[in-house]
Image (cartoon, rainbow, N blue to C red; front, side, top):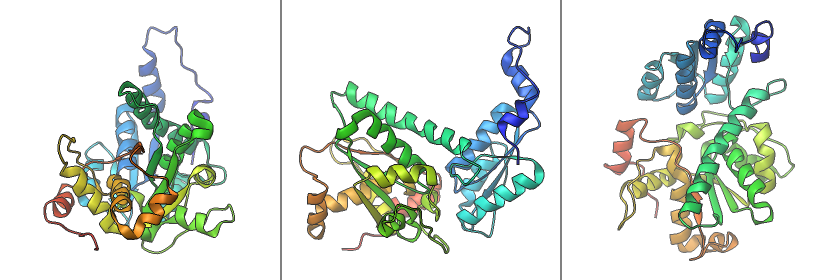
Length: 320
């Protein structure tokens, strides 16, 4: 497994050359191979970037991954396949194959000796937080009072929460971290209450494929540990409820087509606000008519057939 620094250590870009710098870069990196493991979105992004840079990419997907998502990754030029492993085991496979073949691992979780690229990816996620805040200001809203953030390894959630913690300091929004109940590694780590990360093992089965991760990102875990107010593990029907609410708006609300991993935060929020048995949770989170609640939908209908089964046919109904 190589590092970006090693690849460029013996060659510099000549900005005085008549050859445009981006063509020089493409020439220098044309033989690079990016390797990654993904449930969908991350791998597609890596494959797209490799394609644009003139590189190759190899993408490993966990057992049970959507064929539609696999084809979407292949369609942007990747050598992609579905393994017989869960997500965390697929990450280990990508790492092993990268080390064996001299590829460059591009992963949004970290381990000892591999921190730089995950940090860069995490920094990239802050763009969402910055743009959301910019739009809120344009709409006359000073700040969100609450965040409901879905988490897989926790890179995206940690980056967004870290951004707002830096911006708002002592007025950081009350934040709830939301995960699938069979892949709730952040929830488990918080529950152990010893400050360390804890893993969830097994099949990690959930319709929220993008959140089906059993090992937290150690870098962003510290942000989630220190700044989040609550941690919730959710059954799949919570995500399905969120998808239906977003896809069937009331009044002048805008219709939003959200996939399973993107809708679970709103699904949970709706239950907390509506269910009598969750009034205590609502009170502890200080949710009221003055709350400004921010959620992020991180995917659309990346598996259109499954989306239709949930939103149109009522698959995974809410439990009353």
